[in-house]
Image (cartoon, rainbow, N blue to C red; front, side, top):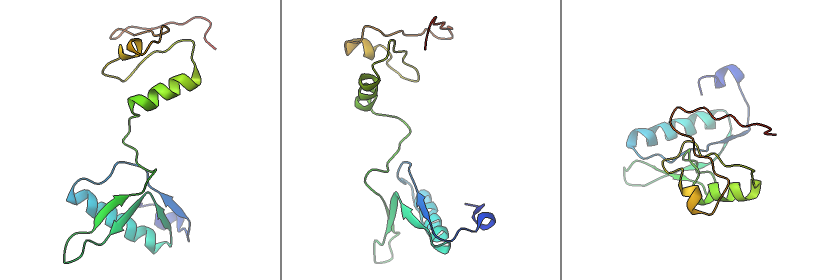
Length: 123
């Protein structure tokens, strides 16, 4: 946001895709962000600042379809694997890599900790 003065946009759309505000401090950051974007006549997609009334802090409400927590759900990961139909599945950054075996995938390679994996003829 600090670079907006350098760019000096006039209009446009700001798309926010992250997890919702959970603390009062994060809600204040959203309000500040919304005010800065309004100063540059930018539309906001991804969240709304909603007046709670009677001296209450405004509520921050995410818009449908813009939530991003940083991790895909198990169902979404399985859909991706199904749609890609890879020759081999190597689960990484997961607490339960063996779960892929439970879902019937026979082409799962589970790496050991600090082990190098060398695949020949991978396209």
